[in-house]
Image (tube, rainbow over all chains, first blue to last red; front, top):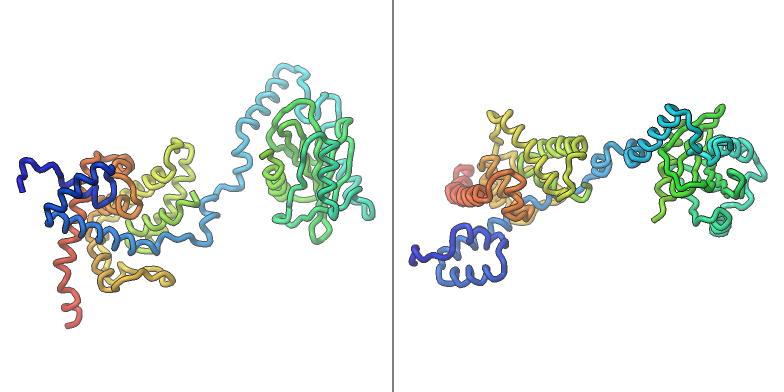
Length: 256
Length: 160
């Protein structure tokens, strides 16, 4: 072996053994190895060492039951984290309105004089959720028809969010006036008969807001606006529970 | 991040040489990653997560340098459900050989061999020159080979 002319370095041999060489380089090394059995033996030894190490540690590359929760540790905050800009915008507008006294159009129900969406939502809940025989116009049995019909009147394709993970199933829905035009009210119920309503209404502007709470007696409402629609979830449940449910709705109502 | 969990767990185990310490390192790394996720540049999430783990491991080994040696017998406590193939004795010798490596050498070897990272990626991740990656890799391999040769006498000693 003429070391002075040696075109193949130690590093080349490692790179070859590790499969980190370009194809044309590989050919050069292979020619060299054919002529230098000692180096060929070293490369072979490294490769078998590599394989043995990989085999040895392969069983540790597992998932365990709690993994998803560990990776998603700050999940309760995720929903609000996703909306920092919207929240900031809402706060900025609010601050601007407060500071200047300008009659900015309400973010929550078009004209500033109109009944805010959260009041319409808690009223709708109060009126319809206690109805025993006629809580809805169209029952969940005709869900496809229900969402198609309400979506058509609303002028926006909608879905009835699946809230099974929160323990609620769809009862049905009805057409309701929201801000003077057609809106949709979907009703859900848990196994004990406790009800929730989800109100959807058109907004005049394509505003987006963060999630906001409002209380009216025992009825809690969480509402937001997104892409031309206002949403409000109402029920006699804790704010925490409501937030989980609103999170579900938000995700499922997101335009794809 | 969830997709990375198996390789992160494997890397943690390979660095710490014990299941319990590996899970601790994994947990610490996840927590650190979640806290610092605003600092993620948006490039390779894997490289970022691995560098967090490597740094935590390094910091930890500096602190616990004095009790860094693990008994041979405890060094191969693999999960029982998935026993790797191969001769148990050979595996034990290889485990001992890898355990004999200094932490920085072991990290390079694991990233190249198990995680199939390129030398350049490893250099970036460990913030060392590519030449240093090469020399550590070469020395790690040589040391393992020497250890395996020298270690041939162990079974005889044990059977005495």
